Image 1: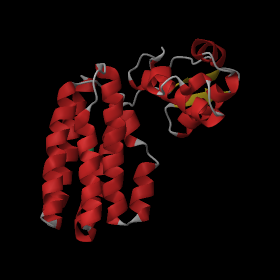
Image 2 (image 1 turned 60 degrees about the vertical axis):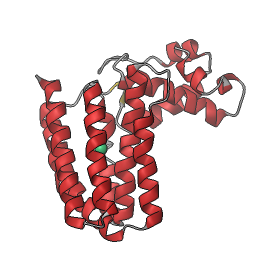
Image 3 (image 1 turned 120 degrees about the horizontal axis):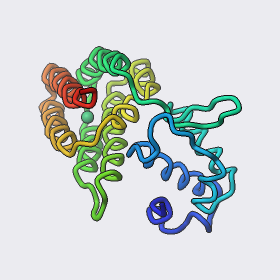
Length: 229
Ligand SMILES: [Zn+2]
């Protein structure tokens, strides 16, 4: 515990409700992503509030935000619990879905690319590689998950097809996938694949961008499949 308070420079106890909710959200999010709160486990509001030294209101707000993202579930009379892990079927379905939409998104993004948009993407990609020190593997990993989600979403924003972007965004693909497994090689290989995607964008090559995205998502699927073995 204490992670959220440290990350927020101890602001938790001192400032406005919104940042208290953010701190509580980050704390529960990290613990869900790292499986410290295992899939299916109950999340008692009073215990979390006591552990974090906050009232129950921000805990409720944070949990309802996590519920909208599909990371926790709320059941009548039982309360909140961590969402179950993806099944193999759900995983396959998600990747089929990504493979349909994201290569096309990358192709459109290459066609719409501007120097400003490219610089933004490069920064988003660099953010992922940076992994500030000192961080334990778990928080490095969940930060990577968020940064990766951001990178993919930026590409779809540039692509300019709001239907594709919002459809994917609403699946919260990354949150669920990154809960599957913690492998440092996942992050390293993904960074290299992002790099070839960026190279295609720099060259303004729409076909290369489409194919780099297809490769990235197929490889990401293959790496994560190990979680089901
Ligand atoms: Zn990626």
